[in-house]
Amino acid sequence: MTIDRLVSPASRATEVLGGELTESSLKRYLNGISGVDAVGLEARAADLGSRSIKTTSKAWALDRIISLIDLTTLEGADTPGKVRSLVAKGLNPDAADPTSPRVAAICVYGDMVPAAVEALGASHGLDKGPGGINVAAVATAFPSGRASLAVKLADTADAVAAGADEIDMVIDRGAFLSGRYGQVFDEIVAVKEACRRPDGSFAHLKVILETGELNTYDNVRRASWLSILAGGDFIKTSTGKVAPAATLPVTLLMLEVVRDWHRLTGEKIGVKPAGGIRTSKDAIKYLVAVAETAGEEWLQPHLFRFGASSLLNDVLLQRQKLASGHYSGADYVTID
Amino acid sequence: MSHLAVPKTYKLYIGGKFPRSESGRVYEILDASGEFLANAAQASRKDARDAVVSARAAVSGWSKATGYNRGQVLYRIAELLEGRRAQFVDEIVHAEGVSAAAAMAQVDEAIDRWIWYAGWADKYVQVAGNANAVSGPYFNISVPEPTGVVAIVAPQDSSLVGFVSAVAPALVAGNTVVVIAAERLPLSAISLAEVLATSDVPGGVVNILTGSPAEIAPWLASHADVNALDLVGAGALDWVQLQIDAAETLKRVFPPEQGSDAAAPSLARIVGFTETKTVWHTKSLI
Image (tube, each protein chain N blue to C red):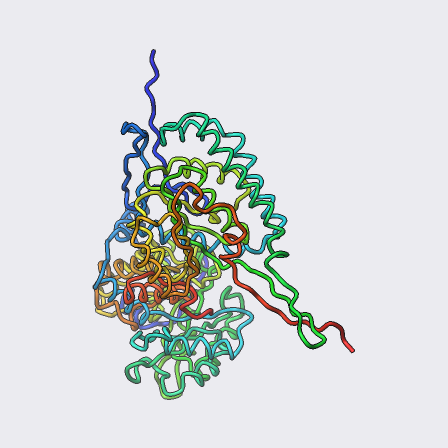
């Protein structure tokens, strides 16, 4: 018999699981979570996607979608110039309409954080006042997560030191799929610690499950619980680099976990579907799923985000259509 | 055992596919004597919107194809039409109530017009373009380029030849089209779509809507992603208002034409929906 390994004593897990946190107690807890009714989940998601959202509700939804977007550029070809233009777009999404709301955050690779912070200037910080925008950085050897823990922690600490308000980390899917839950757990706890700023506050930690690589809904549910227990502030579906990325059933499942966690502890965890959401129509389906699963109070940037780049333009086209009464075209929004 | 006739429901043609109207509506097509002939999809503004999205997506591929290649593709349509002439003659006889000879003449004319326009695809640039004289050691060259997405209201009193006469010239230069077929005579247009779908024309280059032009045309005229508007068959509509709507987004517009020679073959119909690009280039390096 192997000796049971102790895992990091994260406060949430200690409270919920009780006793001493070990690899096997964690495993027992996660494997004890009931399985997902896949057919029921997909039927429920399809049903939520069939709601008709029109006129004033649609106008509200479009503006809300913009204010929930993490405007993202995660390309090898990113430059400080591209990040600056992305920030300009985030601050003023529709150049022809200053009433358009601003996005929630600019999401970039760690080395682009200083460029984003500088470009945002006085508007940096979602909580610093109306119109503030956060800077989110992907870290921990995004998107694969295949690096040593030391590298991942340095990656995270570096982004936080540069001024990132939010860290999007990836879990070690290889470890998770081979059942080494304790290792995944310890990594999240360690990254969370690396998010600590000198003044004792923390950068928000979003944990990317990369659901496209987890294969089953059961795994998604377990990974969601694992991430929350380890201290994640947000659970995020995907990196956007793996297909399938965010899907409505997967997001619905994660919202259910968040709802259950809230019932269990009173604590609110955020959800971020990312990748593959390109049209306003799709995004509105997600809003409906959020409102009818976790609750309407989740429809705010501290608890729900869209990780997207091309979605914003489609929302702007829809907004222009509502305002002008005629269909708009790609010539009337910026080329990103 | 007698055979029970299966009436055909004619669907729309959008992005190389044959969807029903998103509105779920159909309307009855009657033959010349007022008898039921078939059901056709009654397109809504959202079908028009989807058609414009498909047409826009197809612009880059179709406009980048060489004129030589576009000519071959258009010629191929004529070839396929030739092979299915019996079906078209039959449809025109029923829908318009004309003699078989008159229907055959219409199909022949439609085929000839495809071929006539196909021939222009690699030639119109030479005619419409120019090497401009300038007072310096430069080449100064003007070339026509396709304007983009063209919305067309097809002639309303012709099954096939009017439709072809409006669509073919817009395709020659590399534009993609969204066309509203004749409201009472849409069957040949959709049958032509079945020809297009099995020809070499890429999906989305031609998108065909059936239904009420009065309902759909205003949405296309005001659509900011449509670059040009051919109102050849819009004589019975409030086409002045359509022109005003089109002006809001700086579209090129052709006015309505009446009579049997509406949209008669002409180079002007090709060049009308192009933009002129002028470039300077040094003659030599010293």
